[in-house]
Amino acid sequence: MAEVVGPWRRLRRTLARGLPRSLRGRFVLIMITGVLSAQLASYAIWTAQARASQLEQLDELSRNVAYSVASTVRFFRSLPRDYRHIVLDQLRDMGGTRFFVSINDHRIPVEEIGRGPEQALVVGNFRRVLGEELGISDARVEFSRPETLRLLNNQVLLHDLPPRWGQHSLLMEPLSPPILVVQMALEPGEWLYVATLLPVPELFAGRHWLAGDRLFAVLIVLFTVVGLSWLGIRGVTRPLARLARAARQLGDDLDAPPLPERGPRETRETTQAFNRMQRRIRAQVEERERLFSAISHDLKTPITRMRLRAEMLDDPHQRERFCASLDELDLLVKGALASVKGLDLHEEVVAVDVVALLESLAAELRLQGGEVHLDGEAAPLPAKPLALKRCLGNLLENAIFYGGRVEASLADGPEALVITLRDHGPGIPEAQLERVFEPFVRLEPSRSRHTGGSGLGLGIARHIVRALGGEFELFNHPQGGLVVRLRLPRR
Image (cartoon, rainbow, N blue to C red; front, side, top):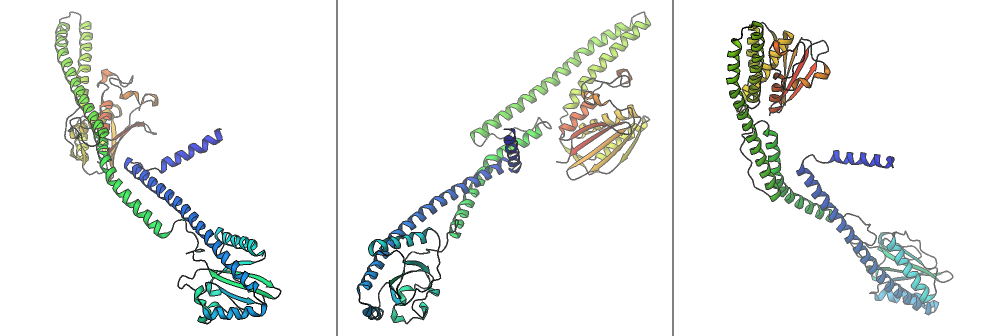
């Protein structure tokens, strides 16, 4: 069972990889498959019916001709042997007969043509009729082309006969249909030769499963249906593409205008649900900002009051401990408020000179004793300037604080800008690389809150990069230190 399921799953995966990625492409593929299947099925049914009808007509016609040939043979068998050639000459001079009849002293060889059920049907009918009517079972029934047909003892060709001999009855130029030849022995050394036409068009022309005219009709129908379907599918899927773009941009700009609610009912309902979701998310973000602002404002007063009371303590040791705890509490409140405001900077996207921005941040850090090396060039990047400045500032300050020196490099491309920052600090244990993005998390002992910072910088930086549609990567350098790699798209 497993051996059967395995190949089936691989086949499904292969087919899935071959499908178009877009919904519009899959709709068009379904339409093409459906139209072709319907056309080919109808053509197969039509071909089968036409073939059955042709065989039925050929069966009736061949039986009638077979009875006529049997009557002709019966007539010549009834004549005395010496009178048969006289009657043949008279018939040829009179003309108008549908048969060419001759009596030869041997059987004339025929370059036989035709294979398949048509030939078998005609031969079978002739042998059955001749056997029933005359008791002849050894008659030779063959088909020949007019160009190679030989008629008399001297094996003269049909085209070489005098016109008065009635050769026109076997020629239908330019169609050149096959000629039916029946030969049988009347007496020893005497063979009756009968040649006639079966007026069936294209009897042995060969069957093409998809003829040229039928293929042309199939292609016309296919292009017409696919063209009209493409226009309809494009109109239906356009709102979905617009909805996908809006969903990708939702994290970048919650204040984007709502999508127009039009189109089919399903698309309209989906758009309405998306607009409703955007309004709810915007309302929740605004409520979160108001909540943190209120908490920060309400906590400032009791913290200040407690600080005044702490200053009135007589014990210097206790006073210092109380003030340190209040400073830490004040730092946490300010960090939380700054985090909320930093994650939701309402800015317009403009072209930012990333090189100039990094140089200005590096100049500020050099004044504080940091060492920053900048390498590479980059064209202006579409981004939110304050958010990007805060992201890069947090990362550079973090690298300087824990590594003392940072190397920044830029790799620009048509699709994205890659910024790599490497410090020369102790790095971060592999098991803690994801944990450092959590709020207020600082790794001990080198990342103690008493040494500065609140443990929010990396989380804010990663959020800003992702909000810009980019990728944030954090890993340890093989030679020591921490590496931060940002990939910022240019769309």
